[in-house]
Length: 297
Length: 332
Image (tube, rainbow over all chains, first blue to last red; front, side, top):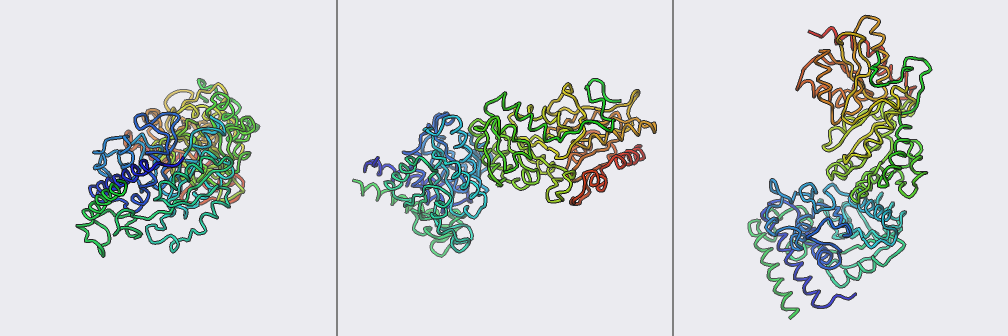
């Protein structure tokens, strides 16, 4: 189903607000990851405000879709999105990474029970998603209406565990499993193709018997079509390889791997002085919000 | 004498005592547990028959998942199934699970607090001819150190069956330690089993014991044989079966130490970090007494028969008797 222009406007506006929340919480936390959360904000927005079957007021609803975040370090985005969706109050976002917070530096479901899984160590999320999809198929058969979505990074394809899970899902033909890969081409030490080349990434997934869709991670219409296509595939699990711009929304942060694990205020200084990084990022995003507004008027 | 209340196998001192691999008890226990609860699922990493999960797999093919030789995935997939309400049993050799996949067990199972049951077969040095790569002698240490994890180490196949049924009913992530080799049957179907409860299997006919031996797993049999022989030397011994290493039976251990005032621990595991370490953590904080440790002393294993290896690494009956004599000398 096509998204209406009104819906796309709403999603763009929401994604921008979520980016603002990410920057605000990172400024408070004084540590954490910036590039990945900004890059994946559009995708999370599409899911939590359109594609996902969930109920923020009843997070343990048995028939909800399951969301497994494998690359736990992009949790500033997960937390901001969940707060915007109504899982908890927006004021919680200021407690990110602080003592006693529900919002641990990497997600821990003991502290935030509405999470499906704890994560941080890379390469283990897809295994858990495969387990969830298998269990649901045992209970509800191949035609189950529930989907298990696993959000993953490209860097964690370096982990052998990732490929073990990809192989098993292919063997089991898990149509109720959809992986979304953040193909942003960066990891902590540099560009993925320099650290450990992943290409031809789509061919690799295909060779493991997955249905592969490549799409821009910033085009709501195309992303939504990709999700609907993945849901329609019957005989295989699907992966959406979403090409994203790390740091998306703040020009000075975009495509620079040095922003992978750095918060505003501690990032590289060649474009903006440390003391100004938070302010500049927020100002840019707020202006962008205005632009989104005017474009749609 | 054998504790009459526990209805133990009175034939354990006979040369022809019945011997069954401990892992067989796991296979039968999983089948029983599977019949009792439809949420129990089995996952294996290409060692289905060897770990005795084949009984479950044949009876409940729709609840069995063959993972292939991928122990990290084995742990993660089980965690995901547990998140959906299943009670997954995962099996492999202990060296690979919880050996190779330790971090996945920590994060996806214990940190997530999911009730996954990890059956590690071929634990201990008595794996024999396969050699040191396949002899898990560090597994108690690496599992008991993880928060939320229970650790159970049965002494024979009958206790393994009871332990398997019992852990299927708890919400805890659990490590079940199993041995490959044929092991003398010490218990009977009537012997009680309770998670977290130690039991005194051997005791003096009259009076207080001078030394308490605390043993876990297959070596319990040798500990009882040693105690019986020491009795003919006039030494009064109690032998405790510490099948649950975590949560540890603090009360039972302290009670034994108060009576005997000298302890020998016996396990087929590195001395560092194992059951003996767990016992000494309890006693040094609550009732310090001299302790002698029987176990592997900072060495890797090698090929050989189980008996050769147990003797070579100082865990045989004579070594246990020597440790008892040593600890008696240290008693104040």
